[in-house]
Amino acid sequence: MINYLWECMIIIGIVYGLAMNRAEEMGTGVIDSSTEAVELVIGMMGIVALWCGLT
Image (tube, rainbow, N blue to C red):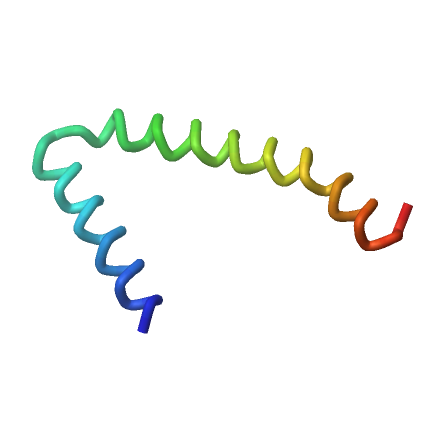
């Protein structure tokens, strides 16, 4: 059920952004957010490995 809510929010956000002619800002935001997400995952990997005893 929560998956449908996420899908609806994402679709509504994309449609709204395209309707307001903000496609370039949307693309830039997606790339910036994905870069930050990858940096966060890499940073957290060491902490998770430590807590799992894999070091």
